[in-house]
Every structure is written in structure tokens, then in C-alpha cells.
Amino acid sequence: MTNKEFVLELVRLIRPKYYNRITWILVSAGILLIAPPLTTVILHFFISSISKFNLIGEYDILWGFLLIILGLIFNILNQIINGSSSIRINFICNRGGSVTVNQNTIVVANDEKVQEIIKTLSKSNQNFSLNYSKTTFTSNFIELFKGFPWVKNISLEKIENDLEFFRIDYETSNSIAEHFFVNIYNTSEKELKLPSAPITELNSISNLAFVYWEKWGYWTLNTYQLFENLNLTFESAIKSDISNIIGDLTFIITNLKIKLTYDKDNIDSKAISHPDFGSLLKVELYNEDQYIDMDFLELGIIDSNIDMKVINTEQNGKTTIVTETVSYPHLFKLSNLMIRFLSKSGLSYEFKNTLLIRKSIIEFMKKIEAQKSYALPSSKAEQIDVLFKQAFGGTWVYKRYEKTK
Image 1 (cartoon, one colour):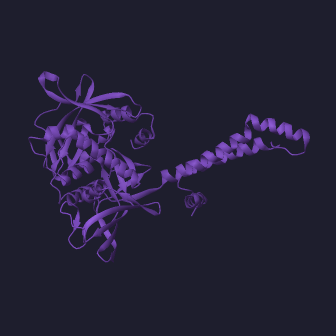
Image 2 (cartoon, rainbow, N blue to C red; image 1 turned 120 degrees about the vertical axis):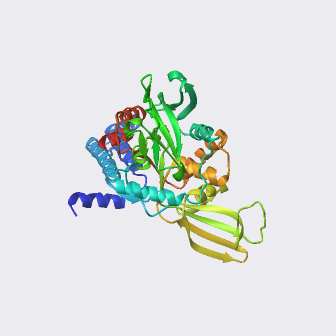
Image 3 (cartoon, one colour; image 1 turned 120 degrees about the horizontal axis):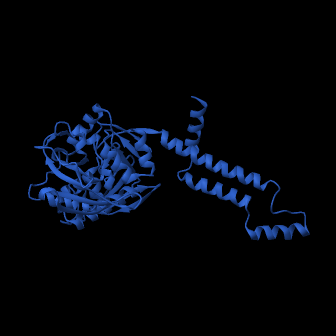
């Protein structure tokens, strides 16, 4: 182990969870030493005039600068640790696939890993009916994505020779209103084939392909510039997906433990029940060394998306307490989470439902301390560069994207 690795490992072991607070305390203390409050200065002159005691020391300025420098170095070290550490993580409910995660960004570049991702998606969706019907496909698309964090509106417009395009208005990271156009597609195959050359721009505004891959219950937003001979494979779609510019974020779940309490005497036909343990009375989430109450909507998010395993079962008379934990790390796109929940719950694709589910999922991800990440496309094109700069320009997300070019 080198000296650098030893120092980083030492700091990693001793650093507190909220290291920014430590930085704030050190820097604030340093500033107070360099420029003490007026009341302290007045008291210093008053006390020093009648005694030998001093409130302000001879070397306070020096110590103040040292504290500030120490605080900044501590913060930088932690950012280096966060940026340099990477974890191998499974993609969507299976042990098969893996990607590399660095400082809340994800890049999928290896073709072999993309194939593993597809296998995991296929396996994880085998118990779900995710297909959109032809009659509701367009309305489901609108209602689903209208509920996304940065989307302001989705409208159908006729522009080129009365051809129809969807206009998506959204807000960038700098709170600037922008928009682009899309054609939407639905395919049950592993490759999307276009009948003719698409329009890639409308009045100098990008026109993109928003594709729903039925087999995997998965939406991707792609530029036509990466289609080959009017074809786009699912592998290429994953590698060039830029749906996170409208808030289709990725969540990583590594630690999750819940406790379910059942009562065999409590018979309620409408309640969630277990064939052996009876009706479910309450659900609790293990968080920061204690259990906190969860609602059944949150339990529905877990049941429809996360593979849990039982680690303990306790019986006390008619009451049974079952403790479950996440089987392995999971990685999800927000749209995939929402589609799965809508499918399992039987709720319709109405805006009030998609908005409620989106908000509930995001709040639940915070509650279980899931890591929010931004997927960076490994396949590059001019339109992707323009749209990423438009959406994330000036942020660490865009800086990380530039490094992947």
C-alpha cells in the first residue's frame, strides 16, 4: 500500500457520515479566530486593561488560517475518496449484470456487460405484465412522463407537412425552460427498425426517438444519429440513453431491512395477508439503528421491485414477526420503478396516479438512503453533447460527462 492509499484509507475509516458539517465547523472556527465578533474585541480590551488575561491571543490569526486550511483539506480528501471509490453493482433484480458507479454517475460501455443487463431485465420482468396496449400506448406515454421531476408539459404538435411530433418542455439544472421533440415507438423485438429516414431536427431543435421496449418494460431516449441503417438495437439504446435529462434518474439500493408483523387472529379480507401468519398489521423499516413505521404503499414499492430474503422469523402466540433484507444490490431507473408499480397495483396511467407514484418512489428512495445516480451515455453524438450541456451545463454531472468523451 502506498502512502497515498494509506492516508485515504485512514480518512475513510475515521470520517463521520456528514463530513461537510465537520468542514463547516473547522472553517467557521478559523474565521472566528481571524475576525472575532465586535463584542469579543470590546471585552478583550476591557478585560486586558484591568488584568493580564487576554481573550484574543497573539497567534489567533495563524491558528485561524490553519483551521480553515485543515477544514478544506479534509473536505477535498473526502471528495477524492468518494470520486475514486467504485463499486460493482447488479442491475435490476438479479446477480447477473454489473456496471461501474463513480460519484453518483453510471457508465455502461462494455458490450458483454450490456448483454448481462439485458439478461437481468428479462429475468426480473418475467412475473410482470408490462405491455402497453395499442389503444393506450400514446396516452400512457404522456401520463407517465408528465409526472417526471423536470417535465413541465408534453404536447402533440403538427409541424412538418402536418406530421405529428411530441414536444417535451422541461426545466434544466439551471432552471431554464427548454424543449425538444420526439417520435415515440413501441417494439416487442430486440431491435427497432424504421421504415424510412426520420426527421432529426425541427426548426433547429432536436427531434429524438423515445422507445418503449416491451420485452423488458424499459423506456430509452435516443438520438437518430446513432441509428445504423435505420436500426437501433436494445444494446445500443441502453448505451446511448439520455432520458435522465428529463429526470429519469437511477437509484442504487444496497442496504434495506424491514420488519413485518402478522396476526393470525386478525382476519380482514381486505388486508394484506400471509397464508401461514395471518393479516399484516404493520411494516417497519430499519433506519439508523432503529425501526420506523412504513406505510403499505412503500411496501408495495418494495414488493413490486426489490428481491428480499427472510433472515429471521419470530413467533409469539398468534403474532409472527418476519425480518427481511435486500438479497443483493439493485439498480433501477425511475421509469422502470413506476411501470412495475403500476403493473402490479393495477392502477391506471392517469396523471394523478403517476405523479403520486413518482413522488412516493423518490421519497421512499430517500427514506431507505438509496443512492441517486445519473446514467451517462457511453455512445456519443453531436445531439447528445448539445442536450447534455443544455440540461446539465456547469454542474458536476456535465463535467463527469465531458471526461467520458
